Amino acid sequence: MDNPLRRDVAELADFLAQAGEIRMANRARTALDGDSSELESYLASNELWGGAGSVADQACGADRSPSRRRLESLLIRLGRGQVSRGIANPRTTTWIEAFERWTRGDI
Image (cartoon, rainbow, N blue to C red; front, side):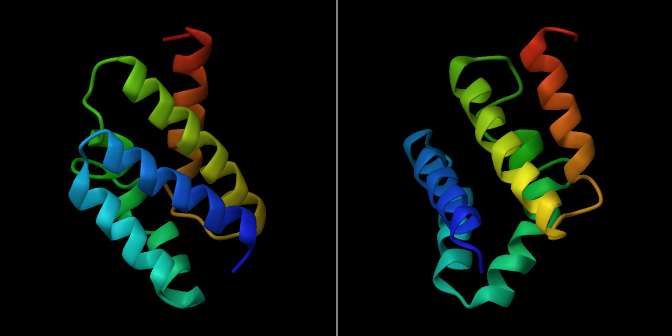
């Protein structure tokens, strides 16, 4: 597995833990501790990029708090890296586009 993706997942896991999202942080760390196929599976999972209950949808709350905005920034970078390497969930691009619009203030 590519080091930039590992680095991004490690940063995401650390941030999630600091934000009190312990279950989500532990899952990301478990994926990092596994082999490449386990990490790739996590990267393409609904747990990370799905709907209700996913990291993308639910971590750090639904409001536009500084914590949530930081999470979205991390996910934009991680998601772009995944898409460029062909390791993505069908929803990854949709989430990236939504986060970018929200960051620009389009929504």
